[in-house]
Amino acid sequence: MPEQNKTLKPGWRRVKFGDVVRLSKARSQDPLADGFERYLGLEHLEPGDLRIRSWGNVADGVTFTNVFKPGQVLFGKRRAYQRKVAVAEFAGVCSGDIYVLESKDASVLLPELLPFICQTDAFFEHAVGTSAGSLSPRTNWTSLADFEFNLPLMDEQHRIVTLLDSIEECLISFAEADLATRTLENSHLEDVLASVSVERVIAVEKLVPHGPKNGVSPKANADERGYPTLSIGAVRDGRIVAEGNTKYAEISEAEAAAFELKTNDVLVVRGNGNKLLVGKSGLVDAVPKGCFYPDLLIRLKFDKAIIRPEFAVLQWNSQSTHNRLISRAKSTNGIWKINGADIRQHELKVPEVEEQDALLVEMRAIRAARKEISTRKTEAQKLKQHALRSIESGGANGI
Image 1 (cartoon, helix red, strand yellow):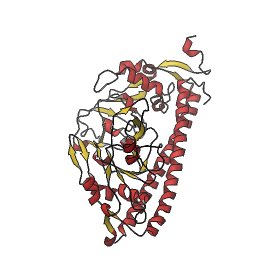
Image 2 (cartoon, rainbow, N blue to C red; image 1 turned 90 degrees about the horizontal axis):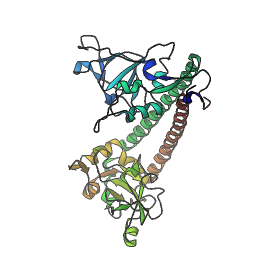
Image 3 (cartoon, helix red, strand yellow; image 1 turned 90 degrees about the vertical axis):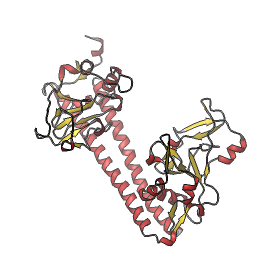
Image 4 (spheres, one colour; image 1 turned 45 degrees about the horizontal axis):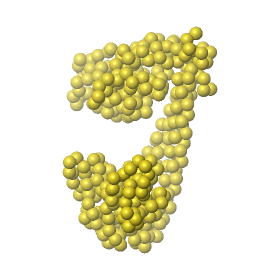
Protein backbone atom coordinates (compact mmCIF):
# COMPACT_ATOMS: atom_id res chain seq x y z
CA MET A 1 0.00 0.00 0.00
CA PRO A 2 1.43 3.44 -0.95
CA GLU A 3 2.48 5.56 2.04
CA GLN A 4 -0.14 8.29 1.38
CA ASN A 5 -2.98 5.73 1.48
CA LYS A 6 -2.21 4.43 4.98
CA THR A 7 -4.18 7.18 6.74
CA LEU A 8 -7.17 7.13 4.40
CA LYS A 9 -10.59 6.26 5.78
CA PRO A 10 -11.80 2.85 4.47
CA GLY A 11 -13.27 3.23 0.99
CA TRP A 12 -11.21 6.31 0.11
CA ARG A 13 -8.56 6.16 -2.59
CA ARG A 14 -5.90 8.43 -4.02
CA VAL A 15 -6.55 9.62 -7.61
CA LYS A 16 -5.10 12.04 -10.11
CA PHE A 17 -7.25 15.03 -11.01
CA GLY A 18 -6.91 14.35 -14.73
CA ASP A 19 -8.09 10.76 -14.31
CA VAL A 20 -11.52 11.81 -13.05
CA VAL A 21 -11.88 15.37 -14.40
CA ARG A 22 -12.15 16.47 -18.02
CA LEU A 23 -11.09 19.85 -19.46
CA SER A 24 -13.88 20.94 -21.79
CA LYS A 25 -12.72 21.83 -25.32
CA ALA A 26 -16.10 23.16 -26.54
CA ARG A 27 -15.72 26.31 -28.64
CA SER A 28 -17.93 28.83 -30.44
CA GLN A 29 -16.45 30.97 -33.20
CA ASP A 30 -19.57 33.13 -33.32
CA PRO A 31 -21.16 33.18 -29.84
CA LEU A 32 -23.96 35.58 -30.78
CA ALA A 33 -25.03 33.52 -33.78
CA ASP A 34 -24.84 30.38 -31.64
CA GLY A 35 -27.34 31.87 -29.21
CA PHE A 36 -25.05 32.75 -26.31
CA GLU A 37 -26.10 35.90 -24.48
CA ARG A 38 -23.56 36.17 -21.64
CA TYR A 39 -19.79 35.98 -21.31
CA LEU A 40 -17.45 35.73 -18.33
CA GLY A 41 -14.02 37.20 -17.79
CA LEU A 42 -11.81 36.69 -14.76
CA GLU A 43 -13.16 39.96 -13.37
CA HIS A 44 -16.59 38.34 -13.08
CA LEU A 45 -15.39 35.58 -10.74
CA GLU A 46 -15.18 36.47 -7.06
CA PRO A 47 -12.47 34.89 -4.87
CA GLY A 48 -13.91 32.22 -2.58
CA ASP A 49 -17.44 32.55 -4.01
CA LEU A 50 -18.88 29.67 -6.06
CA ARG A 51 -21.71 31.83 -7.37
CA ILE A 52 -21.52 34.00 -10.49
CA ARG A 53 -22.88 37.42 -9.62
CA SER A 54 -21.95 39.44 -12.72
CA TRP A 55 -21.22 38.93 -16.40
CA GLY A 56 -20.90 40.73 -19.72
CA ASN A 57 -23.29 40.76 -22.67
CA VAL A 58 -22.12 39.01 -25.84
CA ALA A 59 -24.07 41.54 -27.90
CA ASP A 60 -21.74 44.27 -26.64
CA GLY A 61 -18.83 42.55 -28.38
CA VAL A 62 -16.54 39.78 -27.18
CA THR A 63 -13.63 37.74 -28.56
CA PHE A 64 -14.02 34.81 -26.16
CA THR A 65 -14.70 31.40 -27.71
CA ASN A 66 -14.57 28.93 -24.78
CA VAL A 67 -18.06 27.55 -24.18
CA PHE A 68 -19.42 26.60 -20.77
CA LYS A 69 -22.78 25.18 -19.75
CA PRO A 70 -24.75 24.87 -16.49
CA GLY A 71 -23.15 22.64 -13.88
CA GLN A 72 -19.62 22.93 -15.19
CA VAL A 73 -16.87 24.31 -12.96
CA LEU A 74 -14.98 27.46 -13.94
CA PHE A 75 -11.45 27.88 -12.61
CA GLY A 76 -9.30 30.97 -13.11
CA LYS A 77 -5.91 29.61 -14.24
CA ARG A 78 -4.25 33.06 -14.28
CA ARG A 79 -3.10 34.26 -10.85
CA ALA A 80 -4.46 31.10 -9.24
CA TYR A 81 -3.65 32.53 -5.81
CA GLN A 82 -6.80 34.65 -6.18
CA ARG A 83 -8.80 31.44 -5.63
CA LYS A 84 -11.39 32.05 -8.33
CA VAL A 85 -13.68 29.04 -8.73
CA ALA A 86 -17.36 29.15 -9.70
CA VAL A 87 -20.17 26.85 -10.81
CA ALA A 88 -21.94 27.86 -14.01
CA GLU A 89 -25.69 28.41 -13.63
CA PHE A 90 -26.20 29.38 -17.29
CA ALA A 91 -24.55 28.78 -20.65
CA GLY A 92 -22.11 31.23 -22.18
CA VAL A 93 -18.56 31.85 -23.36
CA CYS A 94 -15.57 32.69 -21.21
CA SER A 95 -12.02 33.98 -21.24
CA GLY A 96 -9.16 31.69 -22.24
CA ASP A 97 -7.80 32.33 -18.73
CA ILE A 98 -10.72 30.31 -17.34
CA TYR A 99 -10.64 26.52 -17.47
CA VAL A 100 -14.01 24.81 -17.96
CA LEU A 101 -13.97 21.57 -15.95
CA GLU A 102 -16.38 18.65 -15.57
CA SER A 103 -16.46 15.16 -14.09
CA LYS A 104 -15.46 12.47 -16.59
CA ASP A 105 -17.85 9.95 -15.03
CA ALA A 106 -20.58 10.99 -12.57
CA SER A 107 -20.58 7.46 -11.12
CA VAL A 108 -16.91 7.92 -10.11
CA LEU A 109 -16.74 11.61 -9.22
CA LEU A 110 -19.97 13.35 -8.29
CA PRO A 111 -20.12 16.55 -10.40
CA GLU A 112 -21.37 18.49 -7.37
CA LEU A 113 -18.21 17.56 -5.43
CA LEU A 114 -15.82 18.90 -8.08
CA PRO A 115 -16.12 22.63 -7.19
CA PHE A 116 -15.34 21.86 -3.56
CA ILE A 117 -12.26 19.84 -4.53
CA CYS A 118 -11.16 22.92 -6.48
CA GLN A 119 -11.60 25.01 -3.33
CA THR A 120 -9.28 22.94 -1.15
CA ASP A 121 -6.00 24.47 -0.02
CA ALA A 122 -4.13 21.53 -1.55
CA PHE A 123 -5.61 22.23 -5.00
CA PHE A 124 -4.73 25.93 -4.90
CA GLU A 125 -1.24 25.23 -3.57
CA HIS A 126 -0.68 22.85 -6.48
CA ALA A 127 -2.07 25.34 -9.01
CA VAL A 128 0.04 28.20 -7.67
CA GLY A 129 3.13 26.01 -7.35
CA THR A 130 2.88 24.92 -11.00
CA SER A 131 2.17 28.40 -12.40
CA ALA A 132 4.70 30.00 -14.72
CA GLY A 133 5.26 33.66 -15.56
CA SER A 134 6.34 36.58 -13.41
CA LEU A 135 3.81 39.35 -14.09
CA SER A 136 0.80 37.16 -14.83
CA PRO A 137 1.51 33.57 -13.74
CA ARG A 138 -0.66 30.83 -15.20
CA THR A 139 -0.97 27.15 -14.47
CA ASN A 140 -1.58 24.67 -17.30
CA TRP A 141 -3.86 21.69 -17.70
CA THR A 142 -1.03 19.15 -17.79
CA SER A 143 0.11 20.32 -14.35
CA LEU A 144 -3.42 20.40 -12.93
CA ALA A 145 -4.11 16.92 -14.27
CA ASP A 146 -1.23 15.63 -12.14
CA PHE A 147 -2.75 16.94 -8.91
CA GLU A 148 -3.52 14.07 -6.56
CA PHE A 149 -6.38 14.08 -4.07
CA ASN A 150 -8.41 11.70 -1.93
CA LEU A 151 -11.65 10.43 -3.41
CA PRO A 152 -14.30 8.69 -1.25
CA LEU A 153 -16.89 6.14 -2.26
CA MET A 154 -20.05 7.51 -3.87
CA ASP A 155 -22.25 7.41 -0.76
CA GLU A 156 -19.59 9.35 1.13
CA GLN A 157 -19.38 11.86 -1.73
CA HIS A 158 -23.12 12.44 -1.49
CA ARG A 159 -22.87 12.97 2.27
CA ILE A 160 -19.99 15.47 1.93
CA VAL A 161 -21.79 17.37 -0.84
CA THR A 162 -24.98 17.54 1.26
CA LEU A 163 -22.98 19.00 4.15
CA LEU A 164 -21.05 21.49 2.00
CA ASP A 165 -24.20 22.54 0.11
CA SER A 166 -25.91 23.26 3.45
CA ILE A 167 -22.95 25.37 4.55
CA GLU A 168 -23.00 27.23 1.23
CA GLU A 169 -26.69 28.01 1.71
CA CYS A 170 -25.90 29.39 5.16
CA LEU A 171 -23.10 31.54 3.74
CA ILE A 172 -25.45 32.87 1.05
CA SER A 173 -28.07 33.69 3.69
CA PHE A 174 -25.50 35.50 5.84
CA ALA A 175 -24.27 37.49 2.84
CA GLU A 176 -27.84 38.50 1.98
CA ALA A 177 -28.55 39.42 5.60
CA ASP A 178 -25.38 41.51 5.75
CA LEU A 179 -26.35 43.33 2.55
CA ALA A 180 -29.86 43.96 3.93
CA THR A 181 -28.56 45.43 7.21
CA ARG A 182 -26.02 47.60 5.35
CA THR A 183 -28.79 48.84 3.06
CA LEU A 184 -31.01 49.57 6.07
CA GLU A 185 -28.20 51.45 7.81
CA ASN A 186 -27.38 53.55 4.75
CA SER A 187 -30.96 54.33 3.77
CA HIS A 188 -31.98 55.27 7.33
CA LEU A 189 -28.99 57.59 7.67
CA GLU A 190 -29.68 59.23 4.30
CA ASP A 191 -33.36 59.71 5.27
CA VAL A 192 -32.34 61.48 8.48
CA LEU A 193 -29.81 63.67 6.67
CA ALA A 194 -32.36 64.58 4.02
CA SER A 195 -34.68 65.94 6.74
CA VAL A 196 -32.08 68.35 8.15
CA SER A 197 -32.82 71.96 7.26
CA VAL A 198 -30.38 74.02 5.21
CA GLU A 199 -29.80 76.28 8.24
CA ARG A 200 -28.17 73.31 9.99
CA VAL A 201 -25.53 72.76 7.29
CA ILE A 202 -22.20 73.82 8.79
CA ALA A 203 -18.62 73.89 7.51
CA VAL A 204 -16.20 71.56 9.28
CA GLU A 205 -13.94 74.47 10.31
CA LYS A 206 -16.76 75.65 12.59
CA LEU A 207 -17.20 72.21 14.13
CA VAL A 208 -13.60 71.60 15.24
CA PRO A 209 -11.90 73.82 17.85
CA HIS A 210 -8.46 73.21 16.32
CA GLY A 211 -7.05 71.81 13.07
CA PRO A 212 -7.53 69.73 11.04
CA LYS A 213 -3.97 68.50 11.47
CA ASN A 214 -1.83 66.17 9.32
CA GLY A 215 0.10 63.41 11.04
CA VAL A 216 3.80 62.61 10.99
CA SER A 217 5.58 59.68 9.31
CA PRO A 218 9.11 58.96 10.57
CA LYS A 219 10.87 55.84 9.28
CA ALA A 220 9.36 52.71 10.81
CA ASN A 221 11.46 49.92 12.33
CA ALA A 222 10.97 46.19 12.88
CA ASP A 223 12.33 46.22 16.44
CA GLU A 224 9.35 47.98 18.05
CA ARG A 225 11.55 50.93 18.99
CA GLY A 226 9.84 54.21 19.80
CA TYR A 227 6.09 54.69 19.67
CA PRO A 228 3.31 52.74 17.90
CA THR A 229 1.78 54.29 14.80
CA LEU A 230 -0.87 53.28 12.27
CA SER A 231 -1.04 52.42 8.58
CA ILE A 232 -3.90 53.92 6.56
CA GLY A 233 -5.40 50.41 6.46
CA ALA A 234 -6.46 51.05 10.06
CA VAL A 235 -9.33 53.21 8.76
CA ARG A 236 -11.99 50.56 8.20
CA ASP A 237 -15.77 50.74 8.11
CA GLY A 238 -15.93 53.93 10.16
CA ARG A 239 -13.56 52.65 12.84
CA ILE A 240 -9.85 52.71 13.59
CA VAL A 241 -8.70 49.09 13.71
CA ALA A 242 -5.23 49.06 15.23
CA GLU A 243 -4.81 45.27 15.27
CA GLY A 244 -2.76 44.22 12.25
CA ASN A 245 -2.27 47.86 11.21
CA THR A 246 0.33 48.98 13.78
CA LYS A 247 4.06 49.56 13.37
CA TYR A 248 6.70 51.41 15.39
CA ALA A 249 8.78 54.51 14.73
CA GLU A 250 11.08 56.74 16.76
CA ILE A 251 9.99 60.32 17.39
CA SER A 252 10.66 62.80 20.16
CA GLU A 253 8.57 62.83 23.31
CA ALA A 254 7.18 66.24 22.31
CA GLU A 255 6.10 64.97 18.88
CA ALA A 256 4.61 61.85 20.43
CA ALA A 257 2.51 64.02 22.74
CA ALA A 258 1.43 66.33 19.89
CA PHE A 259 0.25 63.50 17.64
CA GLU A 260 -0.96 61.01 20.25
CA LEU A 261 -4.43 59.67 19.52
CA LYS A 262 -7.26 60.02 22.00
CA THR A 263 -10.68 58.40 22.24
CA ASN A 264 -13.22 60.12 19.92
CA ASP A 265 -10.53 61.54 17.64
CA VAL A 266 -11.54 61.19 14.00
CA LEU A 267 -8.95 60.24 11.36
CA VAL A 268 -9.50 60.98 7.66
CA VAL A 269 -7.55 59.35 4.81
CA ARG A 270 -5.66 62.19 3.11
CA GLY A 271 -4.23 60.25 0.17
CA ASN A 272 -4.70 56.90 -1.57
CA GLY A 273 -4.26 55.37 -5.01
CA ASN A 274 -7.94 54.42 -4.91
CA LYS A 275 -10.03 57.57 -5.17
CA LEU A 276 -12.99 55.92 -3.43
CA LEU A 277 -10.89 55.39 -0.29
CA VAL A 278 -9.67 58.99 -0.13
CA GLY A 279 -11.58 61.00 2.45
CA LYS A 280 -12.93 57.98 4.33
CA SER A 281 -12.92 58.45 8.09
CA GLY A 282 -12.69 56.35 11.23
CA LEU A 283 -13.48 56.96 14.90
CA VAL A 284 -10.70 56.28 17.40
CA ASP A 285 -11.78 53.94 20.17
CA ALA A 286 -9.05 51.62 21.43
CA VAL A 287 -5.46 52.10 20.22
CA PRO A 288 -2.12 51.18 21.81
CA LYS A 289 -0.89 53.56 24.49
CA GLY A 290 1.13 56.42 22.98
CA CYS A 291 -0.06 55.62 19.44
CA PHE A 292 0.38 58.50 16.97
CA TYR A 293 -0.99 58.86 13.45
CA PRO A 294 0.87 59.09 10.10
CA ASP A 295 1.08 61.87 7.53
CA LEU A 296 -1.44 60.29 5.15
CA LEU A 297 -4.12 60.72 7.81
CA ILE A 298 -5.66 63.96 9.07
CA ARG A 299 -7.00 64.28 12.60
CA LEU A 300 -10.23 66.05 13.50
CA LYS A 301 -11.37 66.79 17.05
CA PHE A 302 -15.07 67.62 16.83
CA ASP A 303 -16.81 69.79 19.41
CA LYS A 304 -19.00 67.15 21.07
CA ALA A 305 -21.43 69.79 22.32
CA ILE A 306 -22.33 70.54 18.68
CA ILE A 307 -21.78 67.30 16.82
CA ARG A 308 -21.12 63.85 18.23
CA PRO A 309 -17.91 62.40 16.71
CA GLU A 310 -19.67 59.08 16.07
CA PHE A 311 -22.47 60.87 14.20
CA ALA A 312 -19.92 62.91 12.26
CA VAL A 313 -18.15 59.75 11.08
CA LEU A 314 -21.40 58.03 10.06
CA GLN A 315 -22.37 61.05 7.99
CA TRP A 316 -18.84 61.60 6.69
CA ASN A 317 -18.70 58.10 5.21
CA SER A 318 -22.22 58.15 3.77
CA GLN A 319 -22.24 58.04 -0.01
CA SER A 320 -23.76 61.48 -0.59
CA THR A 321 -21.43 63.24 1.84
CA HIS A 322 -18.31 61.36 0.76
CA ASN A 323 -19.02 62.06 -2.91
CA ARG A 324 -19.03 65.79 -2.19
CA LEU A 325 -15.66 65.56 -0.46
CA ILE A 326 -13.84 63.49 -3.08
CA SER A 327 -15.07 65.83 -5.82
CA ARG A 328 -12.32 68.09 -4.42
CA ALA A 329 -9.62 65.40 -4.66
CA LYS A 330 -6.66 65.92 -6.99
CA SER A 331 -4.34 63.30 -8.48
CA THR A 332 -0.55 63.52 -8.38
CA ASN A 333 1.59 60.63 -9.66
CA GLY A 334 -1.35 58.25 -9.40
CA ILE A 335 -2.21 59.23 -5.81
CA TRP A 336 -5.50 60.98 -5.07
CA LYS A 337 -5.30 63.54 -2.28
CA ILE A 338 -7.36 66.02 -0.32
CA ASN A 339 -5.88 68.67 1.96
CA GLY A 340 -6.73 70.57 5.11
CA ALA A 341 -8.47 73.34 3.16
CA ASP A 342 -10.72 70.79 1.43
CA ILE A 343 -11.71 69.39 4.81
CA ARG A 344 -12.24 72.76 6.50
CA GLN A 345 -14.60 73.81 3.69
CA HIS A 346 -16.41 70.46 3.68
CA GLU A 347 -19.95 70.77 5.06
CA LEU A 348 -21.90 68.50 7.38
CA LYS A 349 -25.54 68.47 8.38
CA VAL A 350 -25.86 69.04 12.12
CA PRO A 351 -29.23 68.33 13.70
CA GLU A 352 -29.76 68.92 17.43
CA VAL A 353 -27.60 66.64 19.58
CA GLU A 354 -30.74 64.96 20.95
CA GLU A 355 -31.62 63.90 17.40
CA GLN A 356 -28.05 62.73 16.82
CA ASP A 357 -28.12 60.65 19.99
CA ALA A 358 -31.44 59.05 19.05
CA LEU A 359 -30.10 58.12 15.63
CA LEU A 360 -26.92 56.68 17.14
CA VAL A 361 -28.95 54.37 19.38
CA GLU A 362 -30.70 52.98 16.28
CA MET A 363 -27.48 52.73 14.30
CA ARG A 364 -25.68 50.87 17.09
CA ALA A 365 -28.50 48.31 17.12
CA ILE A 366 -28.09 47.80 13.36
CA ARG A 367 -24.31 47.59 13.76
CA ALA A 368 -24.76 44.98 16.51
CA ALA A 369 -26.89 42.91 14.14
CA ARG A 370 -24.21 43.22 11.46
CA LYS A 371 -21.57 42.06 13.93
CA GLU A 372 -23.66 39.04 14.90
CA ILE A 373 -24.13 38.17 11.22
CA SER A 374 -20.39 38.51 10.64
CA THR A 375 -19.63 36.23 13.61
CA ARG A 376 -21.98 33.53 12.35
CA LYS A 377 -20.60 33.84 8.83
CA THR A 378 -17.07 33.36 10.16
CA GLU A 379 -18.15 30.23 12.04
CA ALA A 380 -19.78 28.84 8.89
CA GLN A 381 -16.61 29.53 6.91
CA LYS A 382 -14.57 27.67 9.54
CA LEU A 383 -16.93 24.71 9.29
CA LYS A 384 -16.57 24.74 5.50
CA GLN A 385 -12.77 24.75 5.78
CA HIS A 386 -12.96 21.81 8.18
CA ALA A 387 -15.13 19.93 5.69
CA LEU A 388 -12.76 20.71 2.83
CA ARG A 389 -9.85 19.46 4.93
CA SER A 390 -11.71 16.17 5.29
CA ILE A 391 -11.21 15.68 1.55
CA GLU A 392 -7.52 16.51 1.89
CA SER A 393 -7.09 14.15 4.84
CA GLY A 394 -9.01 11.26 3.34
CA GLY A 395 -11.79 11.49 5.91
CA ALA A 396 -9.35 11.31 8.81
CA ASN A 397 -10.64 14.45 10.57
CA GLY A 398 -14.04 13.00 11.38
CA ILE A 399 -16.39 14.79 8.95
